[in-house]
Image (cartoon, rainbow, N blue to C red; front, side, top):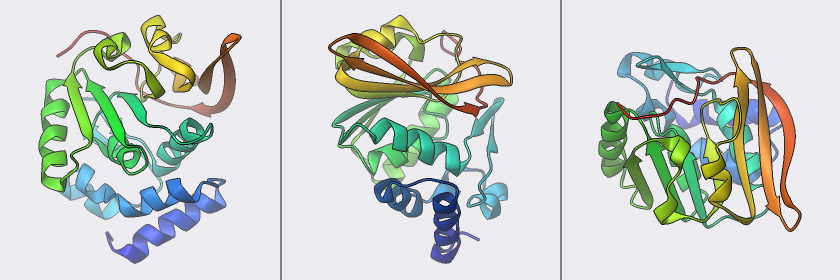
Length: 210
């Protein structure tokens, strides 16, 4: 269930569901999703479904990961991306397959430490992790060409907007409960423009660290 053939079937399913970027599809194919879930769930790793990872958190379904990544990259190649919500590290690894420098913040120490160990074992050296409050962003590393948030908020944190490079994009879910929409913010000469994309369902963006 973790074979290349199984991964290829997932990629074909995502392509049929509207994912067009061949670069993103290649990253989904190459990144071993079964390494980012508990061993008991490894046989389900290449289903197009969200999976639990503990502490009330989930590993987003592959379509959601591919869609958010595709939207983030739609404006052209990116050099520096900030991810808010490392979680298991799967979305982080997909980004690292496409972007030279990936910075990721996780508020839960367990996930932060787990991701550090996992990336070390996988030899992913271009990912920089931080245990901190994602809503505050990472001012010392700013500005970023792209920012991707994997938790829903009622509004885009001002700190994240401020850390977005001119011409950059911020992709995140807005809303509460089942009333969530994936949106993209673009910074241009006129300011920051927002576009609403699809319905989505994410855990809430929480402040503070644990």
